[in-house]
Amino acid sequence: MEISEVRVRKVQQGGKLKAYVTVTFDDQFVVHNIKIIEGQEGNFIAMPSRQLANGEFKDIVHPITSSFREELQNAIMKAYEEAD
Image 1 (cartoon, rainbow, N blue to C red):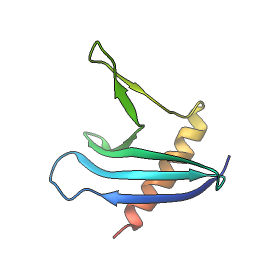
Image 2 (cartoon, one colour):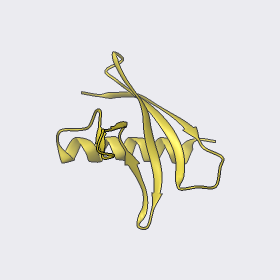
Image 3 (cartoon, rainbow, N blue to C red):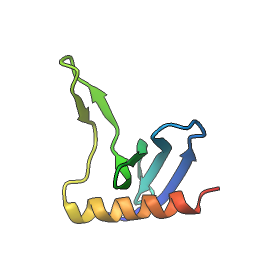
């Protein structure tokens, strides 16, 4: 699966949320609302999630392998750094 496009929408408010990201795969499948969040050890991505009845959050979509998660995070962070 190839990452076709990464679109970054930076958030201007001063909190830990830095941007919302949309990623297109193979020019055929899109995932909206991936978040870039500022953490204690640097920025990281958070996959789209929903809140369960017990208050816990569960990812709606996520990478299956750690190698693809790393590839996805690298592509997103590169696009974030290049965004104006």
